[in-house]
Image (cartoon, rainbow, N blue to C red):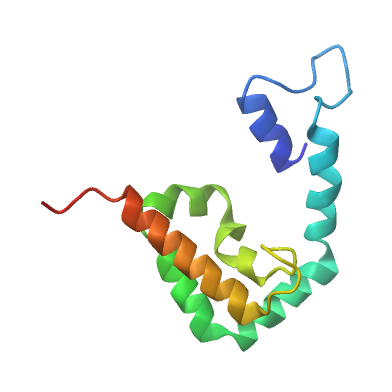
Length: 117
């Protein structure tokens, strides 16, 4: 069972007890998940964290904002997704991906936070 199975099953879909076949659409998700978090990918992400500590601290602060606390608990990779080459556009540098991540999630947090008035 993979993390994607939990999502599919939680939505009321997924393999039936009499069938080992995956639910429709899950085939497209599964191979990408396995490929994107291979051992090589994990080592690459760890290296990028080590060489971009200041940026990672900023991203960690964003993941602690109220709208994202639950997301960060459910998916610990949330605060590291900008480190992956397949986040947003393949041509973006790490700095560009980090900047986009920070901008998007700060803006989303601002729009989801109640007005102070």
